[in-house]
Length: 258
Image 1 (cartoon, rainbow, N blue to C red):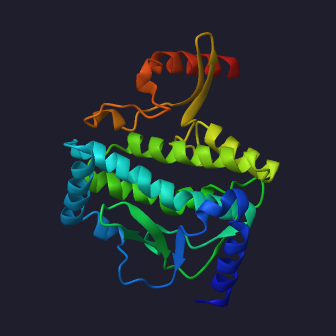
Image 2: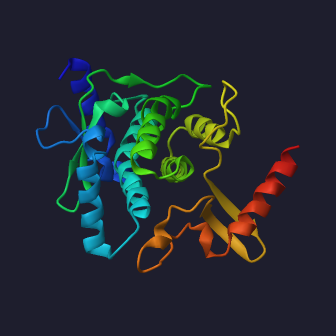
């Protein structure tokens, strides 16, 4: 590794303690023969292996639901250490979608992400947002490739990513990270459109309902968990009868902003 990457790896090890200790083993630096690229993951053969392993554990499940849930595993493994590094340290490992390879367990869950890129990424200065380079270089290209190869809709994938990202930001806020950097992340997630005028696909991925008879954190779009044989819903699912309330809540928010 380069000295810059050695220094970053050491700083990550020191930063990922206490409330961030669960992130310490998520990223592996260097070359691993047993790692797979995203292109490897998206081959028909590997997708079939993912679906087969999932169905052996959970029972017959539509492929689109399996692959949506697997994307949540990907985001859950990769995004928390990257977001945390950029907010806590002001820099993070190379975050291009091809800079990251994956080590899979026999059940096709992810045990670690292998960082092959050698140039650390510097965080944007305020008023820029620590999420922007990660979204531009990793999340957006991942979602486009994943959608094209798996058939999971872009809306579901952006919702999966956004729900995870918002949760990480809330955790970092809870443990006392920079209020300015947290506010910049919240502002980014709150924008309806990006600086170039395009729609922000991460706009308010979750809402916090506060109305008579309903409160709590809810996704705005379902992740397809309900398609599993047990038909259970995740704790933030809008399919528990709150979907119409979420739409009304969003209309109220938009009206208040006028």
